[in-house]
Length: 261
Image 1 (cartoon, rainbow, N blue to C red):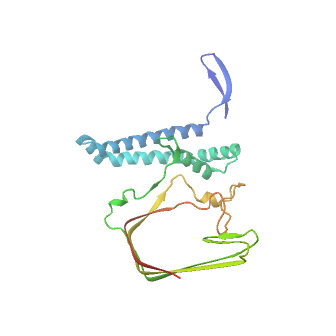
Image 2: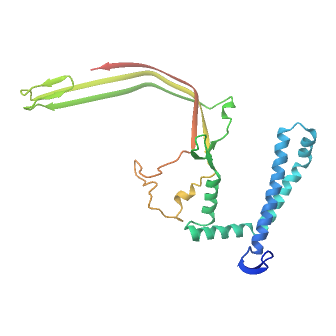
Image 3: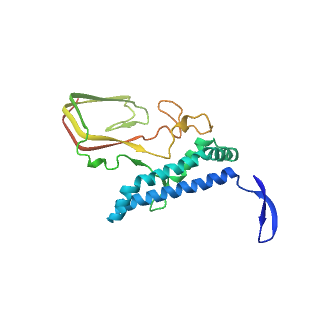
């Protein structure tokens, strides 16, 4: 809002934009919530890394109180208009940046906060699978496949016609008098006693910055086709990875006999 602001240095009064009482209260309570969170997280970190009995005792006795202070500060922040202010920010961003409202602003914030750089200064967004120490689990799900007999038949046929200039195909070469040639090759493969066994685990991939519902939302339009629904699909994003499959102790056995006819 606009208000008169006195400058004691120049001894002048000017009219300019200032924070509304609601925004001031929002900022103050946000700071209070952040300070309470920092105090709680700092104590939790010291308690897990320190051997000082005083620090451990403080965490055991007062940890719930610190946590309650964090929750209380957050509740006061919400009651004082947290969602109202953030909705206003989203609407302003929508009007100035032609973006959707609050959900899209929040999704963009999560995407920005997930930015990381590797040792070569290449940008990526933080992604992980869980549980992170899955390899320590002693018993993985077992997967096995058996097929007593698998038949595979390959057949190839080639035909060529000769002419005045002659023609060559494979190991065969004909002059002007050759008018026709034909070759057929057939091979069969009998696979006996095929078996495959392994330990296999499926790990969900976690992307806290990714909001899949945006892909199907009608709140935005783009000339870029993500998925045309065809078989095979065409587009800039025909799919995305949702799970990681890890296998160990892979054992594959078979007896194969090839026969050429």
